[in-house]
Image 1 (tube, rainbow, N blue to C red):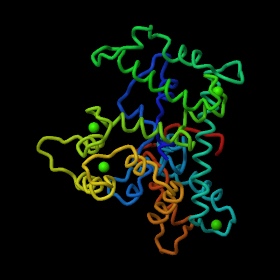
Image 2 (cartoon, rainbow, N blue to C red; image 1 turned 180 degrees about the horizontal axis):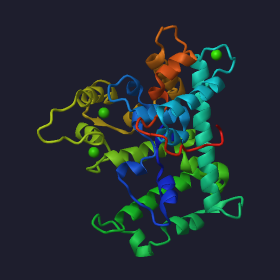
Image 3 (cartoon, rainbow, N blue to C red; image 1 turned 135 degrees about the horizontal axis):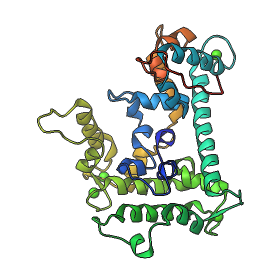
Image 4 (cartoon, rainbow, N blue to C red; image 1 turned 45 degrees about the horizontal axis):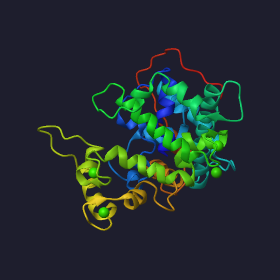
Length: 322
Ligand SMILES: [Ca+2]
Ligand SMILES: [Ca+2]
Ligand SMILES: [Ca+2]
Ligand SMILES: [Ca+2]
């Protein structure tokens, strides 16, 4: 579901300007392993923003601007939509379907928006050359080959190479141009089976700091936590260290190889929407009957939607849906 949370490289670039902005390593990450991680749902460092985005998609941002009262009111309207059979209870299945719907809507809207911005004439395909010019046009040939880490263009050159590779894999018919369907695979590779290997590869490249093609325990932890001097290592970090040894590093050789990374970030038969639905029910089900009433949901509105506790009568952001 980093599908939802993730800021793809492309999204970041388009949102910014013609010149790509590199916020940090993670903005390039296509897939947040955290989100395909079953432990994610029980770990103490669970991120509330994740729940909000899973539940609301892009609208999560809108809700952050709202007062608790307005946030609760709108949440009530959403609950009515989720309760498909209108029996007054939100079941795990209804919640799971809603989360799937939210995710698909996010992906569709994102692809529509980016397709339009890269293809104003709405041609059937976008060629690599057209795309490259739009995003990396400011790099000349020499810049694009930069392998010097201190070079100001190094990051862009690396991004371009990565995108070039992903483009070729998304291009199933091999004509070097992407149809809208191929472009969807390019922008949201985690959504397509045939893109999974490149998702794994990009993840390894991000985390593998010493470039030996595998992930050591230090690299694994370093990706999520930076030690602060004088600060005790938090429990969740210790917990992650144990996860690495007990579950991720299956052959116990001290490193995660490609297969082990794949099992970790794209576990077979793991359903994000289902897991998230279960998690949300667990968090809000006060009477423990495995389903939620509107009251239970509104009572725990901060789990489902964000809200600004200090918003006093400022102009509330409006959305057509409400
Ligand atoms: Ca129902
Ligand atoms: Ca093609
Ligand atoms: Ca390594
Ligand atoms: Ca291993």
